[in-house]
Image 1 (cartoon, rainbow, N blue to C red):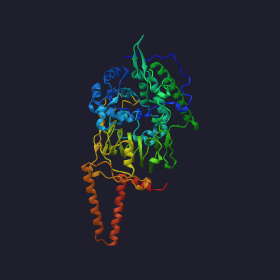
Image 2: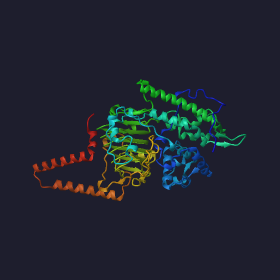
Image 3: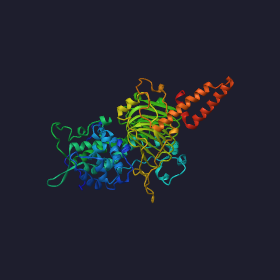
Length: 566
């Protein structure tokens, strides 16, 4: 095992950020979408565990690790090894990496770059930021009936609590989370660099970092505010920025890289902390500048152009809310604390998060990287995505068009999955743009992991052991219906999609055809019924009453919110 990196005394960087645009930021994606509830990946001492693992896997001349080698090294199943590769691919910083561009059939053989894999495994020991507690405990006293021994531990905030208290000011802000991630990187930087470094023999063993190894830190950090379009790490660093592109860059002592990054992290932490402090003190300048946020009023929604900034749809209640590609400058969306509403996000996205929603219908257009749904209750979600993770949800139905197995984690109850059931005119165009294949739909192959979240900041109660999460059942084909998106919602320009691009399984297609046939026969019987005018009016009135009752009982009344005026 390598010695810890000692601080360098050879060079200092008194002003690491002469321009505010060059602040170092943690990449949110690995921390938000890259953590897996697999106990075998949680290492008490990551360096001690990962150093021999790195040496074992480094035998390949390509420095790539395929699924079989990973399963053997970690002593896990092939399914979990594939899950690790798929998850890593969804949060990688390089869009050109072979793991990202590989077709699903080739992912196992293509494998992951060893350095990216080691960093991914290292952060599996990360603990998320604890949500802020509510000042009024009485306001959050109502919770779900306790149906599980894990409820008190796993559901620190249940959906019904979220209805009462979990507006954004009681959740960690983007700035809070960034400060937490920066502090994590600051604490673990020496370990991370030691795993990326190479040993040089000489008067004494020393660690150096090549430019290629340094670029792999882009998995965890970035400079600037434009996401993948930000400043390349090697160009931001003074020791690589002037390297001759035709000549291999000279490796740099790891201690020198360590000192320079620590100064940048300290500078960024100071900047973020000042922003948090100003916001808490009510200063207008302390607003969360990197957060695009929409409140409960659709007309007052605002978005910033930074690719780092998720677009927030927050607190929508008893209304219909629509966002299209032309409305979004952001590559990710977060739907938070929305209730009794219908939300349409008809756009190509990289990431999406749905958190703390209840009694709502949410349609996500095409999400090319990952979707996470958490702490939701009685929600119907229609998703076309590469991958989906469902955590701590109850009585929800997910209509899925997904290229990878849906991941089920945490304390879930009465979940149902069904094939994708809608379309809009630009859907196939958006799917192609973000890389979703309509010929692959693994909606009915959910993969359930553990009930206990190892990344939760809450400690595990004594005597509580982990168990497999409750999986999702398939929706009865007789209950399957198409979801119609009103074409006037889309506006212009219209696309070419005229039908659901995901083929329906035979049972669901047969049921759908039978229902359509029955409906046609009933319409014909009603038209041909020899009834007097007053009897026809009575029948029409009865049908309207039953239809209205069905709208309320099924929750489909929410779809009529879009017909209401502002």
